[in-house]
Amino acid sequence: MTFWILAISYWIHLLTTVIWLGGMALMALVAWPALRQGSLTDNQWLTLQQKFLPYANASLILLLLTGFVQMTNDSNYN
Image 1: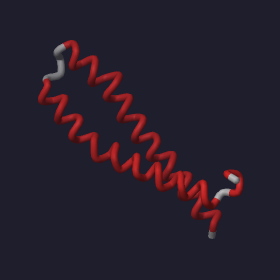
Image 2: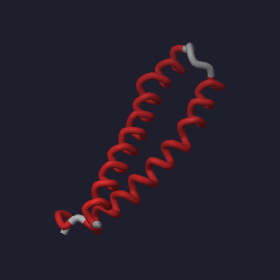
Image 3: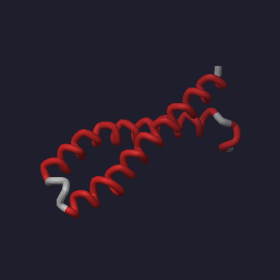
């Protein structure tokens, strides 16, 4: 049972890491320069942030939870 809990925890942990880092990279490497150049309006910037914020918050919560599961169930963390 512990094997499957760890396997699912690792998979969710990696998936949420990709979602969070991908969104941060989008904001930092694409949206921010577009805003500074003027090709993205302030309203579009706020809309993009509002759409990304729930995914970022959920990803961070899942990262914390799955990290805790991994620390408590994996013998390599002792």
